[in-house]
Image (cartoon, rainbow, N blue to C red; front, side, top):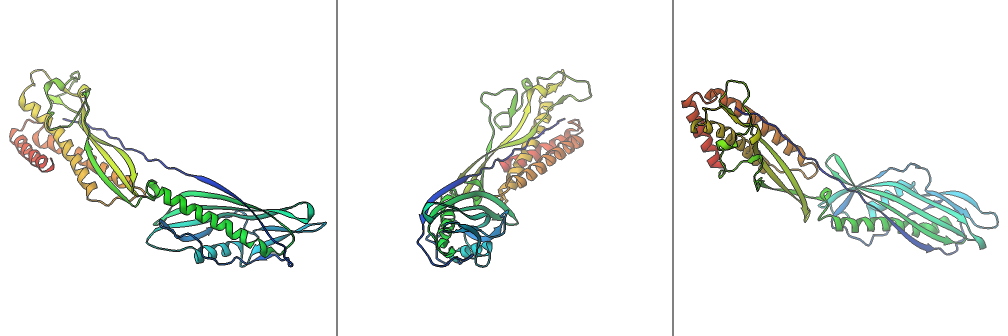
Length: 366
């Protein structure tokens, strides 16, 4: 006779934020207007770990990119925007000027803020600031995994001149953001679990040294009558054990591969095992040992199922948990069938058939 219990393990997530500040200035121009043409200029970086698969607009304020001041004794602000619209111009700039290798990781750039603002200074000059916030996410099928957010700003001082004269500063802050992300992903790709490309699984059988109340399955450690520590309950059976299966996980990431170590636990507690006086014989002990063996067989099936699968990097725990529950249900079904067919050990012929079946299965797995 047997009873069982189980456990499942969780998973953890990280984020990062950075800020860059640069100062620049402008020369004097002769024309002032409200439109800035963002120039196409190939960026100085060639990504090795990602390509931009999409650019999305997540700005709270989707109007003009900001306002500039007309300098003079009574400076007035006027709205400015990028030609074609701020988002469209920035999207086109990224798509046209950043090298794109679709064999790399697909990344979505979310534009959360692009704002230009100015304040008057003495001597007919103005001080300006360009603020840029871009979030980067890994596109994984239909899912998107947030990676990191760039918060950048550029301060400048200028004299009177057309809006187009701040274009190099806008372009500079965009390049800073993309360059910063390129450096970030180069550094994190080998070790960040969200950027892993594959899952490699290894298994161990859990030992416990020195042994306590829990017995962990080993062919070198069969059950003995000394393991039956529980008081004898009322009932009609001669003996009872409570085997179960479980597992724990340890993860590491190396060279963009998730190294997943699964520690299998096939065990039973001595404090829950009992035997009636007069039933301490080799035949009864063998019947109870076979319950423990059946739990081991189910755990081996769990192991082989996982080994046959290509686990997804994004949510490898989902198929593992499903496989575990299948193995647990299989264990329960086998235990019930074993007791029914052997009549809890009373049918010696059926018991011998199960002994052979279990030995054959264990022999092919160990």
